[in-house]
Length: 144
Image 1 (cartoon, helix red, strand yellow):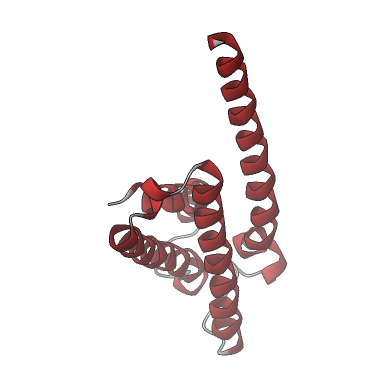
Image 2 (cartoon, rainbow, N blue to C red):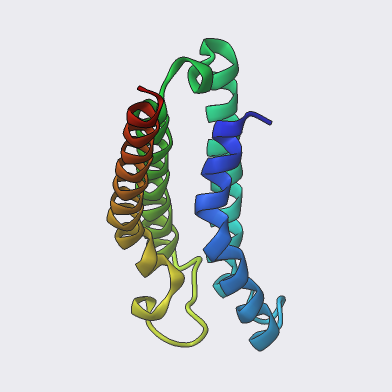
């Protein structure tokens, strides 16, 4: 698995899987299958996007070709598309009455975190990039 795929999976699943586990501990799997479907589809689509990104990375050697900002754009762009696809899929599943939300409304579901996660990752990536550049400049000044 390519590094780009691993990063994409990590930023998607580090918060989805723990919430899913908490829901599984609270709500049994089979009686609440339509509610758990939200997480199963999220995990499946995350894996699918990671595989596709891995193939693209293998074909064009993207991770090695790009610097931090290129990698950041690659992963965040893929993550954004992934979140939009998830929202579309969940909209369709809701329309077909294939999803339930543990007996409550969709406003309390994990799906409500998908869109806000994009600007959060955007800001975190920019902050990390600026810190990296600042540290790099300090090293360069120290070597002169």
